[in-house]
Image 1 (cartoon, helix red, strand yellow):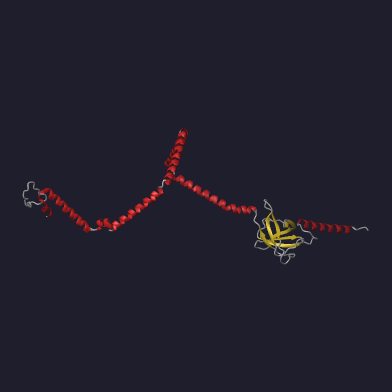
Image 2: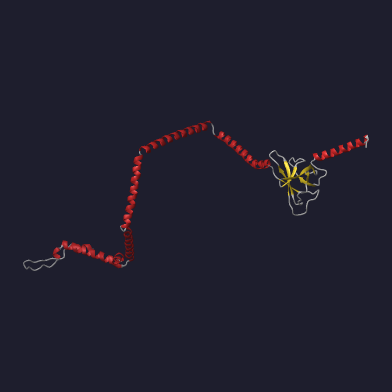
Length: 320
């Protein structure tokens, strides 16, 4: 059968149209004869997500992004993507926008939930966005950089204030103080070397002194043991008892108990003893001045003379 030129032309046009349709579908990463689900998600910012990006579930590619376009005048973006029916999930699943690598590419992955109503063609799924590494780093580093800048500003202000305070004379004095400190450190270093040499030269004497000190400590320990074995504890206890008894005796004397206490506390007895002492003193004085008043011895049997009281009797003068 011979085809006419018109039929051939028509077949060529139909084939061209089919090639255009298939090419357009290939470029959009969609298939005309597939049975995939077309789903939607709305994001405020897609971070450069491009059509044709793979959509995955648990790391396995299950579909592609079909289109990204503005949804309304608020600036929200409508992402349309298709997934195959190998794994059915519910409307409670979420679509996560994540960073695919360090170069900043974005991808979609579905976090499937299997409880609830299954998804159908054209459903809108709940969205979530995972921060990229650069965003996390910027979020963490920004406060640190701000504090660092603030610290630099404060340090600059401090240096300006220091320069304003330290005039020429103050700077000169500060240099002199640093030079003096350096000289002091040099002197201390020399003193340390001298001390090291002194210790090194007298090392044997120091060892001997330490040995003598150890022997002295040992002897003192032995002496302490000897005192303990000699009954020093019992002696101290006895002395403590004696002191307690003495305190008791002094307390009784203070209270006027016993003969000694009465002698100390009885004023009348003190007065009587004082008077008796005075009378005895007068008697001895009169006996010294007038012995004939008390002793009259006759050797040849003469009659004893009567005693005559002298005109100036010391006893009477004392009494008066």
